[in-house]
Image (tube, rainbow, N blue to C red; front, side, top):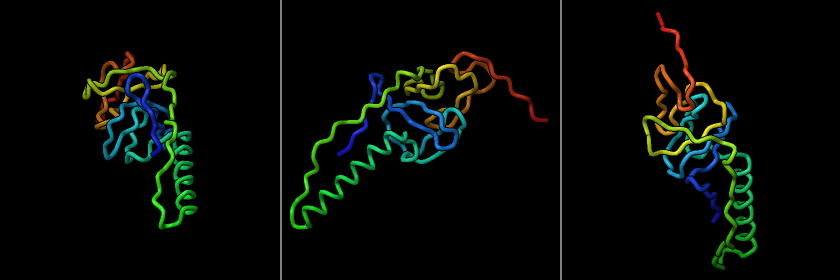
Amino acid sequence: MPEISADGDGCIRRRCLDCGRHFASGLEQQDGYWCPYCGAQRSWECWFTPLQQRYLDDALAEDALAIADLGLEDPYHPPPRAPLNESTADLATVAVACHPGAPLKLEPGWSKAAWCHLCGAQPQVGRTALGRVRLRRRES
């Protein structure tokens, strides 16, 4: 069975299909996630990085070929695969106000407000997770 391993903080790398930015979050799986950068919401299977997608596609192809070679009468036992370890060392840990126990890592230097990756909440006017101020124009 293919496995994507978490880093030492329990995070795995994710990539937004809309803005292309990378972030890392905990292993908890839920129906959907939000991009902390652009706020796009997608189901859980849409957040794989290109490296993760290749790893999973290769594992699926290997399993399909092995099953085809064995035929339908023989039981199939997939060979053990080394877990994929994709580094998150280039990402900075930030606090999530609405989910204080949920790990989140963003690209260093991100100075705009960040959406919560778990619930989609966006911080109000004030300091963002990375310590910069974001001002919003009031709608009239």
